[in-house]
Length: 229
Image 1 (cartoon, one colour):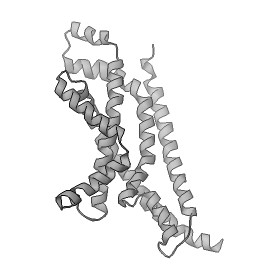
Image 2 (cartoon, rainbow, N blue to C red):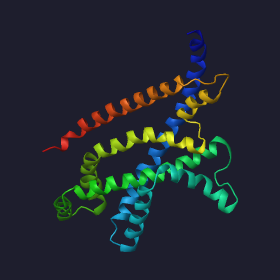
Image 3 (cartoon, rainbow, N blue to C red):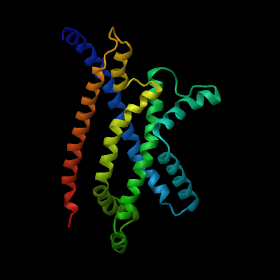
Image 4 (cartoon, rainbow, N blue to C red):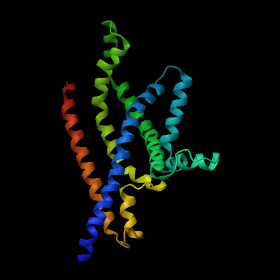
């Protein structure tokens, strides 16, 4: 018991540092993937067939291969093939490579959700806007986009909560996120070795974060309920 009480402040501080890295990767991924996913969805719905075919092919590759594999390729490919590390060294380089891999991966998933949401809006409403003489941009932002948001909140919330857990995959390229921090105490970190209990505490962080997001998205769904007939 005394050993646990002595170790706990050290472990708690280390897990907090790891969680901040996890939170940072989560936030950067959302900031990049949400707008990029919308752009990709426009490309996949383009009437210019070569563009839509190319975008759909890229989305198929990204969605059909593991995120872990994409992390390894993005981080190691430039150095092994071109002989130059594109991302730089240290933790900042690993974070940058992780962020780019996560943004590309989740943007492709989000793009399919956007596409389903846009195509799910009745076409007659867009035609009504055209009859009223509204420009296409205004029709999209005032009619299509608002209804799309209501439709995509449930699937988007599932993907975003999945992202919370997927951030742990960044440890494959030695990014020191929260699970990396917890596992380090099994191998020997800060004078602590053979301790598995810190790993269980990492689960508490994930559960708390996922629980907060679940409540947040539930509140958002209620706020968007004015679209119901």
